[in-house]
Image (cartoon, rainbow over all chains, first blue to last red):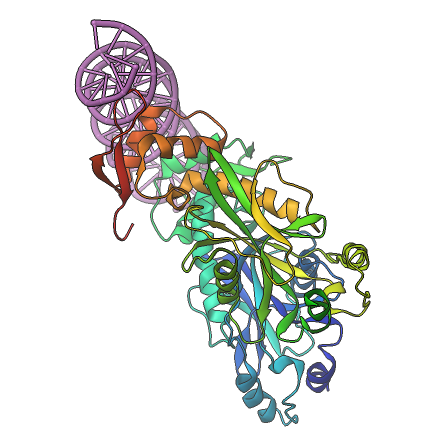
Length: 238
Length: 238
DNA sequence: TCAAAAGTGTTCTCTTTACACCCATGT
DNA sequence: ACATGGGTGTAAAGAGAACACTTTTGA
């Protein structure tokens, strides 16, 4: 059984006491979404461990590839979660025993873990979520309305939510969240959703165009009333 | 002998494969300084390891206290250095054998380490550098002219130097580098040193006062010709 | 009283803000 | 033609830059 093997052998190929967790953020229907995997009755951030001779960056990219199929995602370091008692043995115990698997007190998973948290912005339309070995389900959840989560993962996700807000004010490039090409109104709505505040339409458009990163494409047809918006895509090398 | 004990037993109480390194930055004679410890012929950043049940933050504060005597320093996370081959066994071997200590291939120190790098701004006048167990010397070096260093520590210090430049533009609070009270010309010179560029005197003063973080004190006497500068200190809660 | 250094003020420019106006399209 | 919604322009307010002017002190 996958869970039992995970408990006994999972720790052999990885650096002990160190994990990586990724807050994978998408956008759909004017809502920020977060990819989570279910184990038992609660959910977890996609994450994993770092091979003995594997770069941390490679490990994070590997997890991204496994869970979303994306090869070259936008990844950003979030924070170290390094509390001395960051140990979730009791949570695991409750779940493992409920699954009917013998609990092994000395399993590598029961020790204290320092986790390196990252966040990633992805185009949900291109992501293909896939469960990990011991996951029972995987899916997208509203980042502002998360389900019950294992460990401190809800706190990590919340931290990513705040960081995204901060980061978007500096680097305007959050375009990964929208499938290209996108329209200016779509981009405008995205920024308003992330920042949770109204942004002046006029000013927003000028600021975006002033970055010089956007390339305007011909208008597209649409069915709703009103003028057709232009489409944009990111310029090469942007 | 301290070194031999360090090689055999140093790894028992700490999380394996994880270290913390701190770029401790001071300021003296219009120059940024960096605190380094010498082992053999090269220098290292102050650093250490994280106890099995010790918070990462606590570990960093502990190293700060040990090396500088400072209780509540300004600490800031810098970056994860997590390359898969971040292993310095060969460097250690050369040094250890030169010291006449038998080299132990399986010593904990010969494995791959992920390091969490921090930087700290300190008032050199209040710091009291103290060697670690296996250090042969400790001292301040110009951050822009570092000596030969072990491992990738020179790269870490350089990274901190860049980060400081970036950070000071956002948060103007670098005052830890100056003993209080300080004068506006001193603060002006400090910022120019950090940013490596001339800053308009007038504008700088106005911007600093506009933050509302500074409290003006009476002028001080001085011996050089010219007007006496006011003294400033940080307001409570600033 | 002059030179040096610190502090303040003035002007110009550029950016940000708020809002009005113009354009395109489906009903 | 008009309601709807995208795109552009403009005037007012604010922040930033450059530099001139004033004040204080030692020699």
